[in-house]
Amino acid sequence: MSSKRDYYEVLSVGRSADDQEIKSAYRKLAVRYHPDKNPGDTAAEEKFKEAAEAYSVLSDREQRARYDRFGHAGVSSGAAGANWGGASGFGGIEDILGDLFGFGDVFGGRAGAGGARRTAAQRGSDLRYDLEITLEDAARGMTANLRIPRLEACDTCQGTGAAPGTQPETCSTCGGAGQVRYQQGFFSVARTCGTCRGTGRITKTPCETCKGAGRVERERTMEVKIPAGVETGSRLRITGEGEAGTQGGPAGDLYVVINVGEHDRFERQGSNLYASVPVTFAQAALGSEITVETLDNNQQVKIPAGTQTGTVFRLKNHGMPLLGGRGRGDLFVSVTVITPTTLTREQRRILEQLAEIEDKDVQDEGLIDKVRNIFG
Image 1 (cartoon, one colour):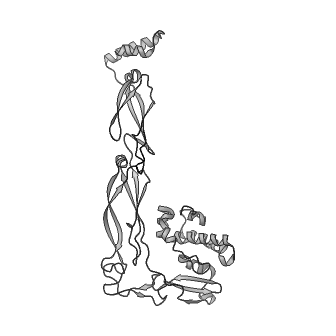
Image 2 (spheres, rainbow, N blue to C red; image 1 turned 120 degrees about the horizontal axis):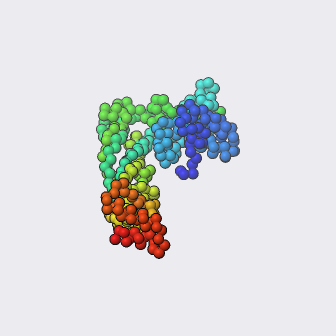
Image 3 (cartoon, rainbow, N blue to C red; image 1 turned 180 degrees about the vertical axis):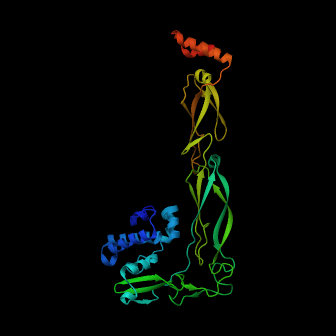
């Protein structure tokens, strides 16, 4: 899937293009690259298939929404269902090709139920759940209880849509194929059967619970384990926890998208954490040992004499864990020397003495030693 081009790029339209723009763009490509207009040209055939696949997704609102959220992974089953049989049937794009090449009654084309019987089973839609967690949750991992509204198979009819004791019948119009095929000369175009709406079956006595839909909306509560090390944008796929399929089709998947909230002390960059700690002028000048709070515990950090604002200390393995338990990042602590805004008389006296010493610029003794003498 990763080798496929973006569907909007294939049709040369923007992501905000409306249905008419998408249809018009596809018509132009279909005219240019249709196999019957380019016999033996495999490159043109591949471009035609690529354009048809893009149109089959972007022309369907539900599939387009999934594609916009999850890319090709979100429509893999739907896009893969298109029929690339040369000029004889193109899945969800039959109608536009019929309009494009003029099939049907205008040219005296003959209509009939054709093609192999197709199954009415359809895969359920994928669902997305946006989960907000704290930095601590992301560091330690957690179990989240999610409440998911979704369509599930009706218990009354077991998903068939027919009332108990009855069964859907084969559509007499299309013979269960779900399509009616029109042919004129070299061209053969299949259109969705209007009687059964493409399902190939007719439900004469609908289920009262689901009104013949075969699915009902329910809210399901489930536990989802969030592994340590996730970050904003991480996506967890839970197979089979999306919406139920129709007519016995498989369920879609649930995608849990993580958003890690901002922290009041730490800034995260990948697996590393960054923090700022204040120290007094005396601590910075004379050297000291300070306590630094990490996500797990408190660590003692030695501040050497003469430390300046902006000096960074690295605490190895005190950052975020890597996904899969392959170690941890580091915590980088930046020192900020705090200048007091108010002074006691004793503090002012000592600082005035320091200022006098600095003014004299005594050469026989370093400034740090003098500070040590003043502050004891």
